[in-house]
Image 1: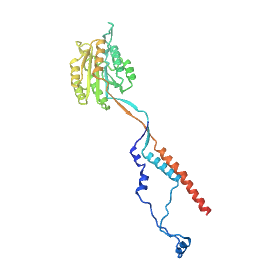
Image 2 (image 1 turned 180 degrees about the horizontal axis):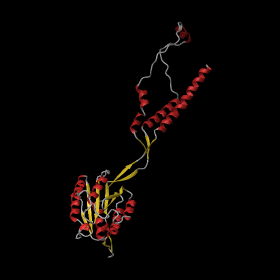
Image 3 (image 1 turned 45 degrees about the vertical axis):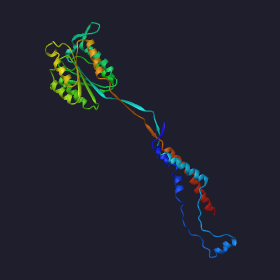
Image 4 (image 1 turned 90 degrees about the horizontal axis):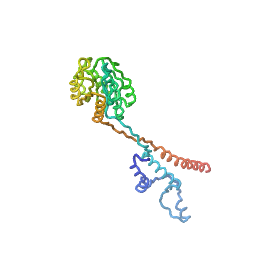
Length: 328
């Protein structure tokens, strides 16, 4: 649509009429031919001399041209614009970081599928986590794989197809046989430092206890709390196991509670899917819609029209004056 950015300037339209009505005409005394016998000449022709002035009158073409040009100049001052249709942008207000334990124990075939068959833990994780990513179209999602050390697979992005592709390519043992949970939380905190969104959520899935971190998980959770990062922990595997494969539920519960998150345990694929459904509910999509309407300035059109109206008239008047002087 078309609009005037400063419509109040239209009040200037009657300004020339007000000046003409309120201000007196300009008077100027000019030299004239003096005749010592002026009275006799006037008496001879039968007129009585009076004092007066000659007022130059505008012609109708000049009056019309100047009035139209003034209206166009005032229109240009109001800054006419063409406002284009609104452009909307959806800006995510939450960043989700997924941290997946890919230690060698993720290859253990003890995860029961809904049909009763057993599958490796990593297969169930790939399926459930990829489905969770598909449900979050409005969030930026990042991905970390950890084992002996954490590795950032995908930085925060809205390209969820890339995230799903990386999840599908994960393999047990690709990050090493051990588990570095504390270092993983530390890496996630570092990646969150470059984001400006108000909500930062880390979802950690692991099937073992921390045996490889340089930073204790409790210390990493304390730093995450200070940085405003909420950590949800998901444990899978066997809590009754020993050694590397033992699931440290106490540590996972403490990490979650200290940062305002929740701890979940998934014993099979159905439970794991239910956990991620619950995570989808407690971290609903949070988006901010930004909208703006591009504007195209049009003031140069009425300004150019005003020049086009005045220029021919004054050029013609100047040419007429030259012709009269040359004829004289």
